[in-house]
Length: 539
Image 1: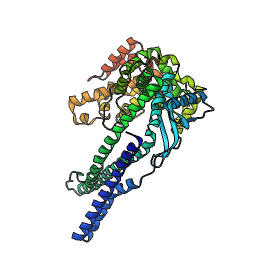
Image 2 (image 1 turned 30 degrees about the horizontal axis):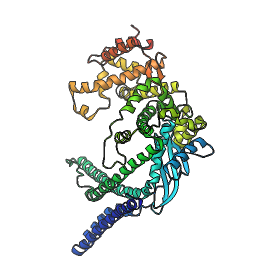
Image 3 (image 1 turned 90 degrees about the horizontal axis):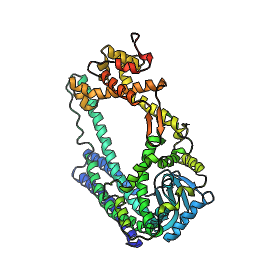
Image 4 (image 1 turned 90 degrees about the vertical axis):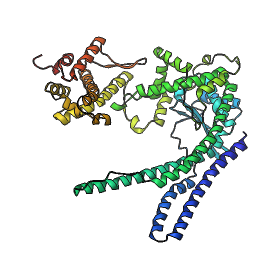
């Protein structure tokens, strides 16, 4: 489908939305006129008010025409003077794709690359071009694979996809914004009706009468019914536009193969899948491990630490498995991208073009000058002021103190239960003394409960509470050992953070915890494993 036909189709879909808006508003206006004709007076005014509320989301969507403004806060802009090698590769890829190079490059903190264009006249006229390139992506791919990634993105430029996205974006945003507005107003009316009924019920109880059950089934009915009309068009709109978008993705893949070669294009897709999973794991396990304690890794390492994880020999088998078998993706008729596995299959089915192993081209990260400085500036450009103000510590200290903070948070519900039942400072010793005094299960009963646990009683209730009690007690024990200097979380790029307890001690601790939360608690085995400050004098 040529540019003109795709532009015409996008404009027709957008025009269809506004035609639907006019139709809905016409129905509301006709209903208002009919009501005034057949039932003038106060009732008509009330219906006018309801219809005006129903029309408000449509009117707002109809006038919401401005495209999103790029404020430049989503990445680090790098100039041709500061990063000449990177710019040279980008220009080379654009020239090979037969399209105009981007006017600016922004480095981001995502495993992704994307192109955009500030097109004019609803996307029919070209504008300023922008390339966003994720540093975590550069950390894991080679130069040949980078050329494949750039070839794919510049394939969108060549097909005018970036210009036409302005029209498509308007339609998608207008439809989804309208649906969201109707559901939000319906929810507000439900909340308002619930509050009204609850106040009425409270007054009835205060007067000694039986309160009626709260029923909000009819609240927001008009908004939800009107929303169904726009939901139906949204499904049609997304299906119609996404079928074109999928063909555009496959066409961009063909440009990628032509520029970088079959093997580089296929391996770039495989590597991106592995990097995406590794990056998510890295952020969760390492980069943000100290946030609970108000800590950050050394400057530049929030993004830079991923390279250390990728280089760890102990992680290679996991990464190889992700490359070999990309996780299955749920297919949706509204997804712009075909499944990655399908894209890889189509590329690898092409004949060998003899361009060699993409791994021999060297790491893409080497294209950056002064990478440590760039990684630090990227943090400044993408992280929040609150995050940047956190104290910087080395990786081992970060993981140790971060895990301690998580452990303390995990123990807090049990501490709060001890305060409610026993008062005082809710120490581990206070809890063990309470267990010896027969108060442990009163403390357990004060723990937060699931709905199912709240309905249980007797033995069943105790079985619901026991795992939560044991977990909280284990957290308190670990905190006691750590604060006494008898244990510490050891950091490893292959294993994350592991508490340095011997296997024998760990086994004995598990047995002691089981004894402590038994129906008849026995704290003696646990006390013997703890610092002597927790031992009764008779020990």
